[in-house]
Image: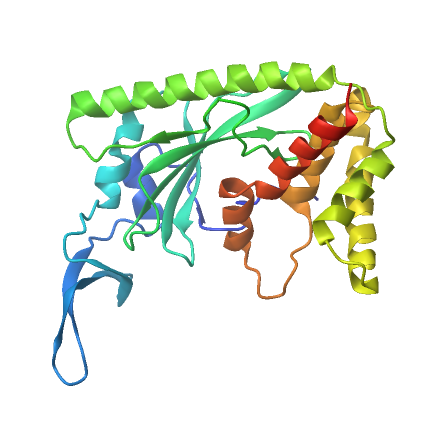
Length: 300
């Protein structure tokens, strides 16, 4: 069964009706402070501090940052969400092994080329300096649970979040996020229509195989086997019943490749569920490369 990359991470917060409830239910309602870094000999490390919090009953170091680092507590980072919309529904929340705190919520489903898409918003915060405060817009094709975490053309799929506990500013941020989501979905729909009108001039099998052949950049037997394995996974998704209306088009290939990147088996046993969530949602380079490859070389 195909599921989202966030289906098995964090905590289910779908019954929560407020940010406070989300943070409490997910164990993210901790307070973060800083402590000096001290060597074993008692020397204080200059210009650096550790961000620390008690999570559950256990004190934890969340990161090492500059002494001028500005901590934004989770409550302050996400409180504006309560002013967004009564139609917003929380889904999951947690913290990845890389230190990204996230809250995942969804807005009402929309129709794109006859397919239902649900726009998800992934809000993020951190205490190690690795992640800025922002919200990423991620449309999900419901029929196959495919993520399209991708900025089409000049349409941004993320919105910066300002640290503010002022209600007027909170409402302004909420409105900005809603406008950003609406704008992105409108552009997303336009691009989908455009890609659906682009007819392939080469067989999908040849296109898919050539892309992976170039990506592997090797003539070893192992690379050849991997190329064939990946090609077959994309081709199987391309031939799924849910993609029949778009076969022979770039949009059909994009749906298939999105299916592949969202649901492909992990490359390593060391790969974790939240690693897949992070890579597919925030680093869709492989998908972008595939779209560019198909557009520039093999369509008319």
